[in-house]
Length: 349
Ligand SMILES: *Cc1c(COP(=O)(O)O)cnc(C)c1O
Image (cartoon, rainbow, N blue to C red; front, side, top):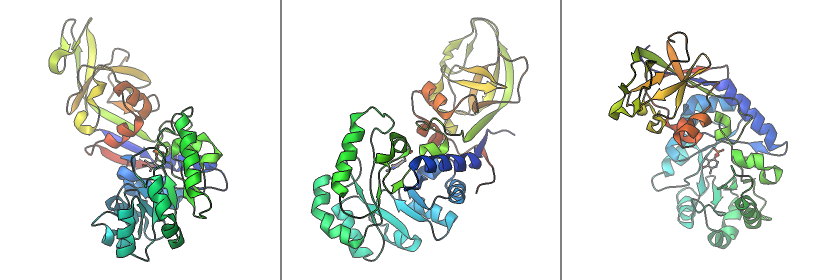
């Protein structure tokens, strides 16, 4: 096969959801964030695996993503839209029974006028200053919005992956103040928030990255394997260079392979001369620039030429690749390209 093979372990996703569900505690429901095409892994398959595991409430970034999830899951599960009720969303929200998380007075007005009987939620900004109603705005609207029975009131933590950050407790305190006594189910914790402890859990948690095998959920099962076929082998002689602009020069004769896969497949160019591929448990450093479709690696640690090398495998997690590229596991996953042959493993979904 001429393209890389991406294997997505749906059972691992289901197991990660179950582990985060038990970490969320018995009085708390655990939802699932499936935005960005299920963190790049395929929204429909991922959502079905999570529904199979027990998830009943799903979160997406915008209404179009909600449509893919509704088509995959059918009627029943609740689908919440973080961007709220945008101009032009009305029909899609209504036809597909999507629940907008209202972010402003403008959205609230639009929703009540266009779909007065349709469900909605409220998103509050407790300090991230990204999305959600400001505290003052909310306090002015609270007595109008709460009697109309929002399904959920939520806010999002900015530093949940840093347990020592004082921002966590400050946001928690404000969230409690803004929602005290309103009697509406609340949701505050993403993956990192679940790990901060029970006071962050409220009625519903919203894990994303932990479902897909990423930090900060250290006990997560790895979900993705990415294998890149070897196209060519060579010995680069001492003094010769590899790749665009000759950024790597051999200090000794070096056996190399070139594999199919490059930055057009989402293998970040920042891995140039810093990342590694793996084969049979042996690390094979990337030599020179990551090209659009190709990567060359040093196989001097191997006694044979493998048929493929892996970027993501048991030896190298999404976070290890992220560290080598100077980014986060979320970006590694959501960059995974569309040219791979995708295979879903496991019973779930
Ligand atoms: C992406 C997102 C989540 C999930 O966060 P993770 O860190 O991936 O667990 C939860 N809530 C909101 C509002 C988000 O945007």
